[in-house]
Length: 205
Image 1 (tube, rainbow, N blue to C red):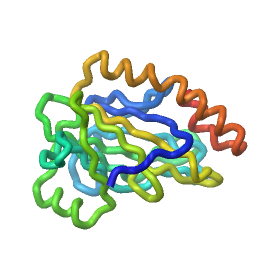
Image 2 (cartoon, rainbow, N blue to C red; image 1 turned 90 degrees about the vertical axis):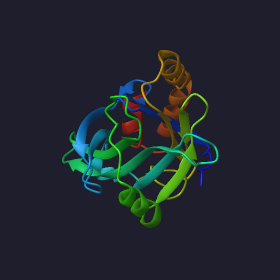
Image 3 (cartoon, helix red, strand yellow; image 1 turned 30 degrees about the vertical axis):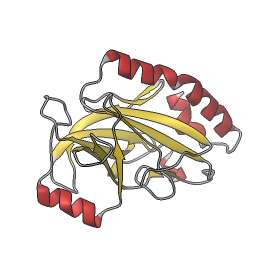
Image 4 (cartoon, helix red, strand yellow; image 1 turned 60 degrees about the vertical axis):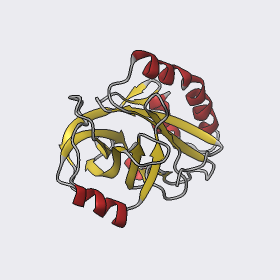
């Protein structure tokens, strides 16, 4: 099920080659093993800042299809566990798996039994790409990637854009540029709601 939109959203974008973040913030990435699958693939590091606030992204999987009928699976996103410790070294891992073979950092695929296990035993959302190979997803409630933490208003959330393969400059440039005003508005709104919750958003804005 595709998540529905929240009243105030901060947008994050990711591609298969380590380009990920929000306007003004580039997320760190690495190639690391996913403890869920044992496969080493592209791993984005989402900052938990401050860790004491208990901010996390709901864990689970997002399946991205090449077609609206959802018959051709293209990518899998795993909102996983945590690495590091302390105020400046705590991250949640977001693993990117691609079925393509274009030499991208995410070009590491799962076995059929692994995919079957994910589809039958994990928190999972299915979405589809558009004709440009871009998929957008807004989680709600406890869906994978849903933003939770102390004093997070129920009408605040994240939207994720996943760009399949290496994006053309126009695609990623338009995506990043179009988010600037949205990010600015989200930060201003958030600062008015609670005293330290904008610590993540301030870095992104």
